[in-house]
Image (cartoon, rainbow, N blue to C red; front, side):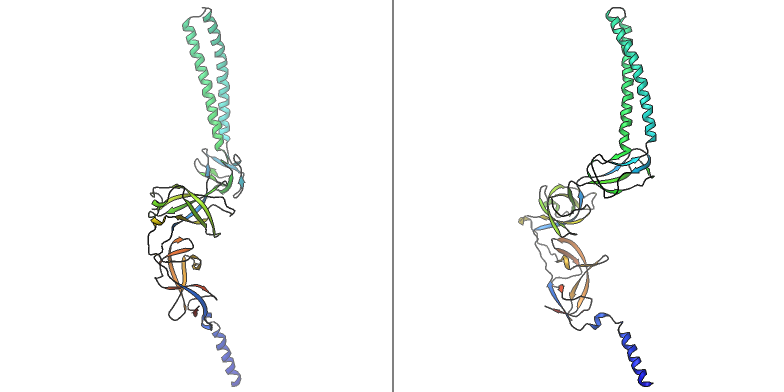
Length: 356
């Protein structure tokens, strides 16, 4: 029995050892390529983050209070200019229009009778059969009847104009990007009901710091990097804001994008590179690393460095602006400190490495 008992204990110990981290079992070091931190970089451009927006966009609302009776489109649907989008209950408006139409009929009848009397008195006055005062009184009655008729017609124009706010139509051709209500909801004056963005052209709204805004001019050709597609598109600066009062200390710059085959959607994040003349270069102490080697874990950004014991060390860093394909490191990495660019295996904290 003793000869059997000892192997069983050995098996239990071996099975428990299987729960140890994988890095303990590493036998061969992982071959890695490293690079030293660069500083004092003179970049021939400044960069700013931005988002793509449609050149035409609108949140449509109504001036009338009423229930939403019908939403004729869906989010993502393409629409044409003048196409009906949303209908709001207009029973009150229909009743008001009927009252105005009745007022017009009444005013028209009064005007017709007064005009006949006016024409007759004009003829009588020409035949010296009516006095000047009688003609003046009839002229006043005629002008009053005409004014009442014109006022009634203007009231009808006002009511007809209000129908444009109970039947919302597309102000331009584009795509429905959002609906803020459902059928049966109460629509209040000024409350957005539906959002439409034009599909004719796109622009980028970038936020530029106060250190760089003075060097950016209208008409400047810039390069826009689409982060999600890793594609560059040319564009031109169309607007430069000269105030950062309502934008948190950043200056808004709008860039019109050139036509491209890349599929662009509003809301995509971009990096805009603004060219700077050589005379405008400023020597700065930036620590830059390739953007592609940065990995994300929630809100944390990290890279791997190499310790003196030739092991991989996970380092969390705080990032700044992006310069082309490089990103500025604000903290977590020192000058002349080596970091891993690539590895021939899967890295983890404490993994043995050998530098190529």
